[in-house]
Image 1 (cartoon, rainbow, N blue to C red):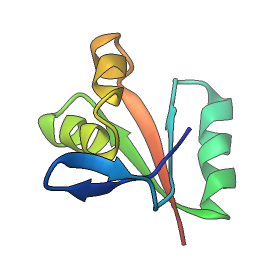
Image 2 (cartoon, one colour):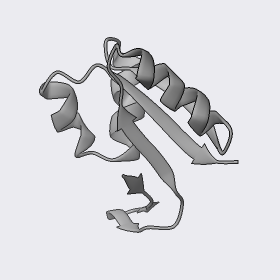
Image 3 (cartoon, rainbow, N blue to C red):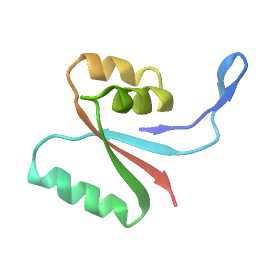
Length: 81
């Protein structure tokens, strides 16, 4: 998913920047996915096990908080270089 928005005093109002967010499992294919993305995007692996990771995910899109509640614990966040 590509999430892009500008934060205004009234909340997220307009989408302008691009960020890729994908959930990661423990598959070896997922680590290959991260390496592949690293060729094109600035990649960051975020764990939702700690509060900073949850804040990072929710700051991209507040609806991703539902994914954390459903048990997704590891995300890859990619932004354009």
